[in-house]
Length: 250
Length: 166
Picture 1 (cartoon, each protein chain N blue to C red):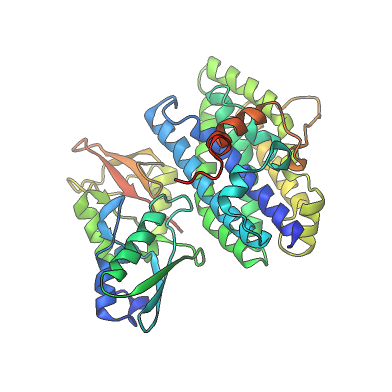
Picture 2: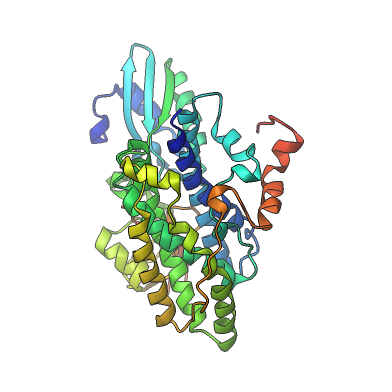
């Protein structure tokens, strides 16, 4: 088995899976019908993407693994999503900020993966980027609308930005697997993405009148399987059926 | 007959034509352009289909219905899901676009106009009920992944727009 490729696919898929799950929690709870539908549409896109990644990962793994066993039977330490995407749906400001912080990265990542020399990753990226352009447009528009809305919405956005900004750096901080994948022409160049990412992020924040936190401290660990306290709760929801009735199928 | 499928036997074409998209039942899978290839050897068929959106929940059901439809005319079929080339609204046939309009869903505009509509609030999508172009985007995301939600400011009816996807 190609260990690095398998791990890389988990990293790509886990971000989509955990964020997709977070958004699915909002089904029926959005602040208005249109935003509720939009957020759950985005959840569906992300779940579609993770199915493609995990179907491919199952093939790479080569044993009797399936997309479902990869999604439902790994323990917390084996999940390689970034810390940002597991942060809770505290309020709509947090939902939108988390989404924009991820979408901006996701878009830059997929632009590069559209050039991947791995045919399957290349195909998934070309498919997904069309969807992610809509996500990015949606979350960026809402960032502006809320930041420049009322005093209350502005204040709530500032709280969300202050609390979520420290989770952003991990997205574009390459670990060993990502460096190896870049060297093989399969993965993205995260150093290049990082520069573009913070140009976009900091540019938008200053444009819409929000401050990034002064101290330059960033959290990390998700990509190595070390998560925040929220992750266990996600997994217990996510894996409940499979753990209670092992090997159940629909 | 759809160009890239002109090589297949008429009876197979007819059987596939009867399989519809469960979310837009007026469209055949051939109108939608998601059947990308059909390979035949004797009574064995391999059908390649591609999803409109990654998360399209109808794909599994469509795959099963294609299998049944082909079994009913005496073929064993295997359905493969292919991702490349990625589906675009260019794969929709002209007949498919007409059917959408009659069904009350505005068909996709060409790309540059679509961008003006979805991203710059231009009023260009004709209302499928009254044909007025005085229509307004309500939400980029609609009842299914492939549609966005519009409202006609003349007849006041809400309607779905099948968004351009390239």
